[in-house]
Image 1 (spheres, rainbow, N blue to C red):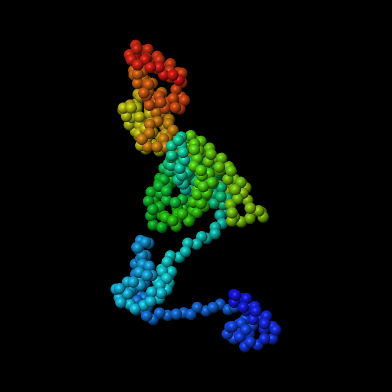
Image 2 (image 1 turned 30 degrees about the horizontal axis):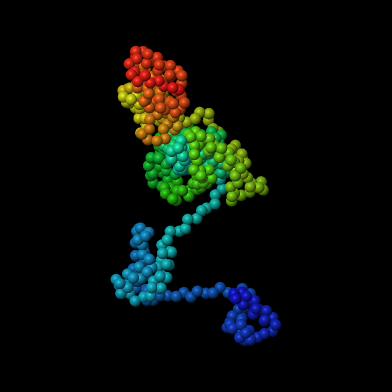
Length: 439
């Protein structure tokens, strides 16, 4: 029986005229308890006696010192209450109960512990703020288990988010993600929150100060937004919790089970469709607007006019490089190989490296354009770049890597076959194999 039920029975019997002495005897309680029940139907809170431990007195500072030193030690190599008691007995000859030490150690640990992390509810003005981050995930890309990166920009007020998939999280992908996100939103938020990604931050200085990447400064100046950098570590993740949670939610919702796609473009089309589907989502915990819970799409309709005006010209994300063409008419960019016209072998060429493509220039003329490779040590070769060599070496075509790639991509045409046949005839039949390529 609970004390509330006991008090109820005592009060009911008291209304029948039963004396306090009789009530105490009938219910087996002290007369003080009977008087408490008559006075109030709610039992008083039990008082916990404040016990002192005089035997522990001489050892309190030693215990506190051990526990303070533990703050700089690995978590798995810190004192437990039992270990403290064992050391007191073995090293100092203390005559004290383990339970006494345990109570004191628990109090000191609670006192030395860091204050709990408390989230402060936030209200964001329409169009005032967004958050940016990259998220990692895996897919089956053309039959290969591949790690990719998802750029995410999330508007803090409406929760509307833009997602784009890249093969890496380098500067070109970071800047291109901004171009795509601003075009998708049709405007620019006033302030964007970041963690300390390398494309934006070169070095973390004191407090909120950062040595910023020159390219990032140019991006910010181009679109006219302000940046806010979170503190490093776990604490900084809580300063942009909206995009952190969005990455996890999107990954669980649309990348489970693991997608199987033929190309990065196909995957980005799936992601774009997912962004449209999310417009019907209602974010739980949001306050009512006009007496109802708005969907993400409806809320974004209210926010979009408050974004800053988007300029027509996109930011140039390309990085300018200079590469030397090797004896196989290739250049090496970020540990991947790309073909150029054979006449440029041995020369230096300019390269403009973008997020998804790269261009090779001879002077001011673009002589080759390739899709950026997702893997290291790969070769991306164009058959046309080797045609002038195949005029002199038609027998090299059957085993050419560029031919294999052209066949796989479906770009080996009848014109290529005609060209090769003419090259063989020009060599007066020196191709011993007589092998013929069939389209």
